[in-house]
Image (tube, rainbow, N blue to C red; front, side):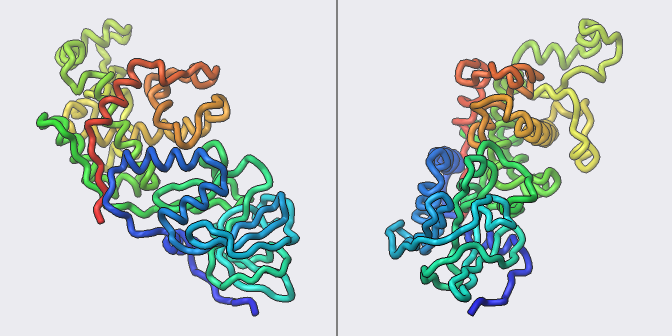
Length: 365
């Protein structure tokens, strides 16, 4: 018999999937995650269960019309030919993450991650225990399983999209405990990085960021200090700070200094999202705490724009977003639009990546 119990929130499905996070450096996790996500859907699912979820699972292949029950280690336990709808939309037994509810007269019912509602998805004789996670592979290449925030998720193939018709994984607000540090004695750098750690949960909520996104943007917010002003130490920056009126005149703005870029990351406009809450003004961006908050928020705005522009550049994917953020940071939108952005050849982006190597983001058990 089919069970009739429901989770009250789709997010519970995410929490069930989430394993305890072991002590690990974010950069090591992030790079390994990206390598795994570059593989095919079935490989991502198998690796996620081997590394994170440690539980049996079922894969429904729409193209082959086959359902296979796997052990936690990816060994085939049993397999069966099935009948399944061809569409990827949720109301068509769509691709994505489900929990097995039961079967009646050969029809198998699954609870969708997106809305926790039970739907009939396929027909067949496969015997599956209740509560097992079921992954329905997409019939189209437009969708992708990927590891994100230390769990398996499902969304658009290139970058994350909010598409209501599909069984995409819901927003995950969970903030994982992590310690940020920098392997240098410079107090400016240490304060900057400590601010990113201290304000993580608050900024995640304010800017609607997931854990992986925040950590990636925190790396970028620190790394961008290097090419912009050499961590506030460049002579050019020091001169701009001391004579802002002359900078404004040189730019053709007369005595109006409002258009000047300010602070060690050269912010031109403080995002509204943090300006009032943190009482930020352009004149206070010289302080590491204020600069860190403003830069993280600005990078978060750019991240949204970059996802929207991803179709304009074939190499922009969810796993490569950090590499392309600096183009928008500099206002070089045409490099993205025309598909000419080549971050591996960009000296400033190399400096950002080198700076990030001096960071240590360590997850806490």
